[in-house]
Image (cartoon, rainbow, N blue to C red):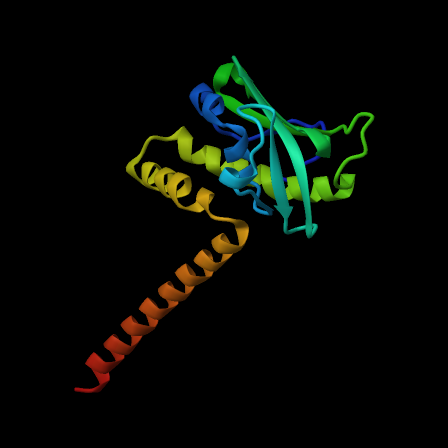
Length: 192
């Protein structure tokens, strides 16, 4: 995926799945942002769409509250992040054969809680994250079902710091396993 540009539709080269977009609620959308820490149980004020969420943005090192609303309809999806002025959109293209994402930054008359540059920087990481999560739902293979389960039950429940630690530990475990295999093969061939 190329660098996202405001008001430009970026094709994902994945078919449109209406049920995915219907189920993509505000909290899941925000947790796909790799730099936002949201503690749902303690910080949600209000219910459903339009609820206020306390955000700890580790990219800008700021805390703020935003109201989030999502809207899903036939062949389109929209998420509005109130106080930031950010709107993310998805739509069906080519009669459902493709999906496209777009965003715009329009704070309106209010002063946004973060600058336009900070929002653009968030989007640079956020849209690819949404695309990769969506990719898991476009094919119904055992591998995709496993990774969907892992994402929904484990990864999206973690904050960004916990995800980084988990990824580091996973890479370290793979390195340890390779080292054990190399030592085992070396011992087998050179000890005899």
